[in-house]
Image 1: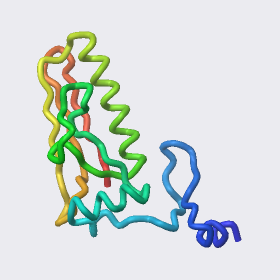
Image 2 (image 1 turned 120 degrees about the horizontal axis):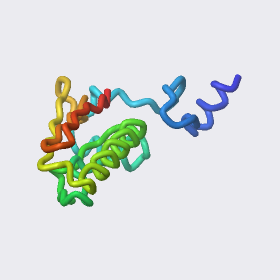
Image 3 (image 1 turned 60 degrees about the vertical axis):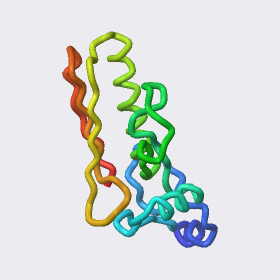
Length: 130
């Protein structure tokens, strides 16, 4: 009964942070998003988040080539990684940063973002988006 009520209300899911989704009436198949325009449309509906690959606070540009789209949970995890990197930068343990994206099929949505920092930090982390 609750699931039917949520589905009819089009409210979506309300849940705790980093909890695996059990139900979302507006779920998006990320493999079918094959253009920036489609991703932007879903972001306008609140189903995806736009994220700067290289954050503005680290000198990244607010330009299309520096923006990717991903679900909210992945965007929150990306922010956590950015915060870890910021701490290492403040500690002067970073000499360089490489961020690489991988894609599945023809999807415009990256499947992973891999972070590698050079210098004393020795930081490597991969964000699994989907």
